[in-house]
Image (tube, rainbow, N blue to C red; front, side, top):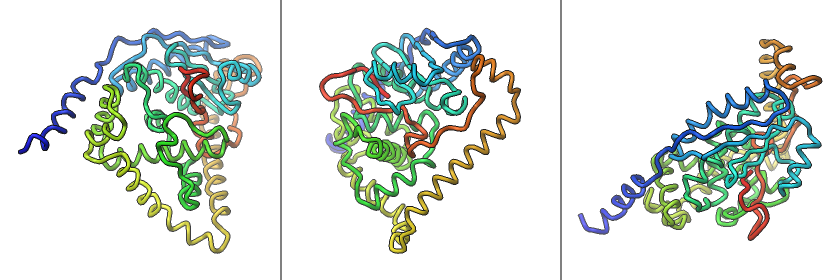
Length: 331
């Protein structure tokens, strides 16, 4: 075997071996309107953090979660931090802080835990990367997948972007996402689908090796080349081809003008399914317990307001301000 043949394999081993070991568990502080809500949040963090620490190989020194139960108060806080009005949560990795809407505002504890896991992933990635920043599409794709979110709500957005040939190059999503909500939704969908596609084709170990390479200063294309033997440009080309094949059957419907009707049907079916699931969960629980959890006058697991595809499932992300702004925020 020639030196060039074994060099990539050796580099992979060295980088993976240098991936940070899991540190001590973080100190957890929760700020909430009442003790029940604080307890629920603390328990959720305590359950989620070890899994994220095991996957990333790192843990923040502290985790401070501020749960805000009033929409106006949350909007003011987001404005102070430079986050978009449609955000559901915000992570500040350099501070170890998360600001998040309460379960009542998010439509229930299940959605709350999804958003919380997403933001916690940002806090765990920061120490794992040793101060280096991941391409935003990679960080957001990872956060969405490892928080347990699914592709169901993103399929119409992704299909529309693929069929209209509107997917931006991944390089254009490395430092920030579009500010416009519809374009941002497509950026999140594309990020989710690419990371999911890479995992399905190359596996969890390869993705960890990509992160290890990036943490040690490799450029994204080099990190992917070391991990799986393919450049990022080559991977992206194959991804676009696979997505075109995956959604090509929908193109047959465009001639009859029924494509958008189908998208509406899919979105409506998803909303009905979600509301029925929440209703079933509400019927199986003690309502007084959840009213106590959310405080006097609090709503008990209300149906969520319709939100745009990706933002409806993970609407806690925003663009990274280029060259300034809140440089430690990850939505």
